[in-house]
Image 1 (cartoon, rainbow, N blue to C red):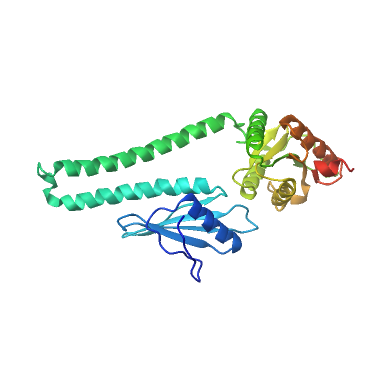
Image 2 (cartoon, rainbow, N blue to C red):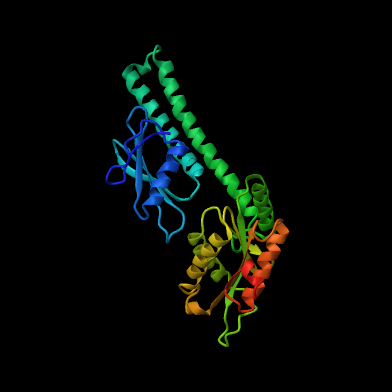
Amino acid sequence: MFRFKQDAGGRMPTMAVMPSPEDLQFLLAQAQKNWRRPVELSFKTAGGTQLFKISVQCDLTSGDPLWTLTKTTPAGSQAVWTQTSPDVGLIHDLIEIEFRRATTDEQGAKEAAENGPAANSASDAPAGQNAAKKVDKAAEDVEALDAEAMAIQGVVRLLCRPETGLYTYPAFLFFVDQEYRRFRRGGLPFSVAIFQMNFREPTGRVSSQPMPVQAVTEAALRICKAKRDLDLLAHYSTFDYAFLLPHTDRDGAAILIKRIANALTAEPLMPNMSADRLAVYFGIANMPADADRPRALVTAALEAHKYALNGADNIVLYRDARRF
């Protein structure tokens, strides 16, 4: 791990190598100590022609850490990407893709400069060809990554309802089972929330009709902004919805669900409709606090959801449902 100290502005010394996952974890820890203040780390390619800066900022109101990668070359500076994620491994992989591309470009430019006009001669042709091959190989690697991303998206689409873009009920059960297997191996808790959202009629009664697709789509967009990257939103049964919250204990799930409920009711989901007409009811259960098997966990969340529907509260933990 690179040992560095921050200056007064929260910046780190420039590294001569790409940061490791441990370096990024240290950077994230520093950002978590300084809420709403970005912490930066600079690093450069071996030839020093391309300078990168990765910054991370944590904000209690916006959820996951916000990462930004910036690249500076002789032609100027530009933001390469921004990503909200607590997954340091993912951030490292994204940085590595850009760093490898920059290194290949730098090596190709260096070899082309060294060969100069003489590259057309027979003696220098192999060196020029090698530089061109390296650039072509880098382009092929990028195309392969794009193809892999498209293939992944194709698989994801098969697991989602086309009209809403949310995971299907069977897909949700599959992911719960996978999270349970990870729990058995690593012991990390996870939570499930079953919820219903619908409009109240002028009489105050909650409508029994499904919400319009426009409202569901807007709700999904707000939820995706409020949730963490690892959290999974899906359909449950026919008209209800479900959350899978990995690495989340019972209290953490309650805090996150409260934030999502506030995001849903802050403004109307559809034009010409007041925000207070939206009714949302959540039931939350946790593994291992409330259940020891996936099916029992979902059943516990459903039980808490029933109490929420009956007016106990719009967010009910299974632990509290047993007290009503």
